[in-house]
Image (cartoon, rainbow, N blue to C red; front, side, top):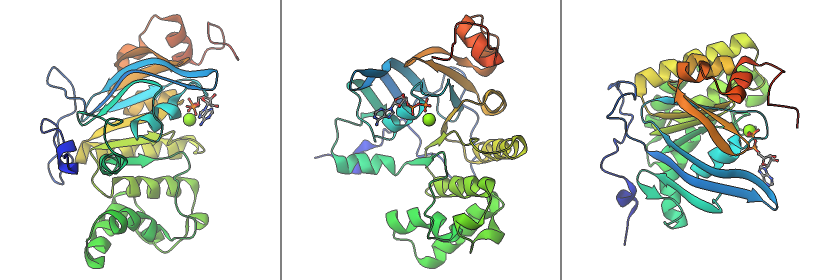
Length: 280
Ligand SMILES: Nc1ncnc2c1ncn2[C@@H]1O[C@H](COP(=O)(O)OP(=O)(O)O)[C@@H](O)[C@H]1O
Ligand SMILES: [Mg+2]
């Protein structure tokens, strides 16, 4: 019988460990805790992912860029195991997550931090309790230990003065930062962001991007960021993948993507209205 410990590929560091910054994931020794292998997904006759292959580099920030409705959120839901592919495999920490039991999948999920579009905070709980929630649910830490961890996380994201406020009482940017603190509170190896910049003005987007870079530099981890904001992609990413019509049409180091001569990639990354990408 396999236990949750068996799910942890020994080749993959149980990263991040506080106080031990890691080099960014580049070069030949890069490992991949999250692998997407020929994943296809349709809803009825609507084909969303049509054969997607992508290995996400550990200790790097990979951004998936693509127009609205192209399957970016569907891809993230496959990585966290909320959607099952019709075909292909999602391999996380060396395990095909659909070859294990629901309980084991839940154990794998504990190693993920996810920041959804709206922060997905509990409206009735204050910011402190929102960030404490995963610790109370998934660990047996004492309340005083929890307090220490939560306050340290809230300090990192500049929210120590908002601990007693509910999400409804704070700005959109603060909600995102609280969501970020909560996503990181269990020291996840893999952190995913679904359009962290949505609904934020350019200045707040830029501040949030700085925060993503700062925390990644400090703790490392495999970051997967989904956005349609080209500036965000350019600023934070080590790697950029461009998704279009359910396929990855470009993948490479960030500057490479911005220097691509593929017409669609060029059009999308330059925000040009003329080109192969239309309104349909
Ligand atoms: N559970 C679902 N049932 C039916 N259609 C869905 C479901 N989830 C997503 N879709 C459709 O799949 C397409 C891709 O969605 P999504 O991944 O959310 O796009 P985006 O790239 O904007 O994040 C959209 O057309 C969406 O309507
Ligand atoms: Mg989306």
